[in-house]
Image (cartoon, rainbow, N blue to C red; front, side, top):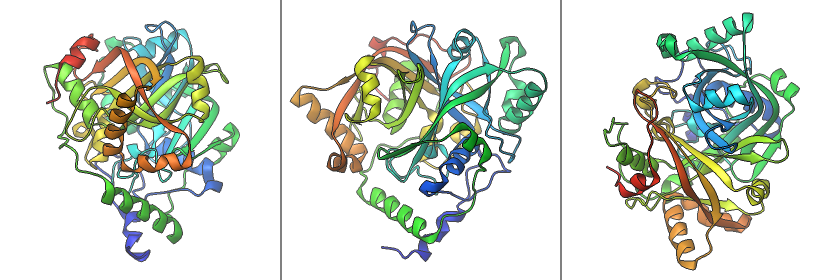
Amino acid sequence: MQSVSATRSLNAIKLSTNTPPALSSKIYLAPPFEDAAFARYLAHMNSYGVVSTISVHLDGQAFSNVMSCSDGIGNNSTGRLFFYMTEMDPTGADLTQDSRASVTFSQAQIVGEGSCAQVDPEDRACGSLTIAGDIVEVSGTDKIFALEALFSRNPPMKHWPRAHGWIVFEMKPVRIILVRGNEISSEIAVAEYFSASPNFESRNSEQEYDHARHLMTFMESAKAISAKSSWPLFPNKAKAARKMVHDANWGVLSMLRKDHKGPFAYVKSVSDGPANVSTGRLWFFLNTEDSMMHDVKTNNNVSFTISQAMIDAELATAACHDKIAEEPTCGRITFSGKLIALTSATEIAGAEKALFDRHPSMSQWKLHGKFHPFELVISDIFFLNFYGGARPLSVRDYFAASPI
């Protein structure tokens, strides 16, 4: 085991070039009493999130999609979250009909070895944030400020075709939930969130030691997986989708929540098979006693979103060749369908093998809760990886393809 002093180099690891140059390069892991500061940190350091809406094309079910965002100009964090969307995209179309939405961020999105990208995104050393409320169109001086904030963090937006009818949106928070792995979650008051400042100070030595221990345990136990090359533009969309799913280790699971009558989402680890075996199926290892499962029992229609930027972050490389996450050439895929618990002994064994191979720490989760393998039975696929808008990808074609 390395000494605490040996782990201090984690604090100063440089982030990839896709991180806005004005941002601090220090890595921060907040202690429990600084939840609001950590939430502001996650909202500021991430230049994209997964936005969940009430879907028009899915007849009122939850739909999730990758959207670039900004909470301020350069390194000026306001906590306000701005988006730039068009009704040509299903998310923009949804919001013009129903403003109820949520946006989810993971610490695993932050590019760099010092983030939690090498620790399982559901591990307690990796934080995630979901802000639920209303995403509404802004105008006047708010719009002027929002555009400056968006363009400062996402410069390509300036050059997007005006004919697409871009709309500036802002999240108006109602509920703010911070999650630390699959063990701890806390609700942060909206006023507390806005009064806090994102804390860029480095961790204390005890926190450094704890993070380094988790990091080394994961790296030592993880098995080799197939090489994940930088995102190529495959002409065969079904094969491209299959490769993207197999390369991914996590994504965002969205559903409708009864308690606030709107969409909500969670960061979840996923596997479609062991390292070199791709099935295309989406398996999860979920705690049946989690509050999320109460909503699943009422309505098990869910969506699950993966971005190529998430995959590239795990590799500590520039996301999508320095493209922002909302660019069409940065692949994003959303699967919609029903989340079901596996019942067959054979199916359970196969799913657990796939999950434990890609996420070794999962084998220990049963010691801390009633975990069980679930599958998203796919009924609809939204996939975008090039210009021209998302084209239909049938479930049949998706499963018939093999990843490249």
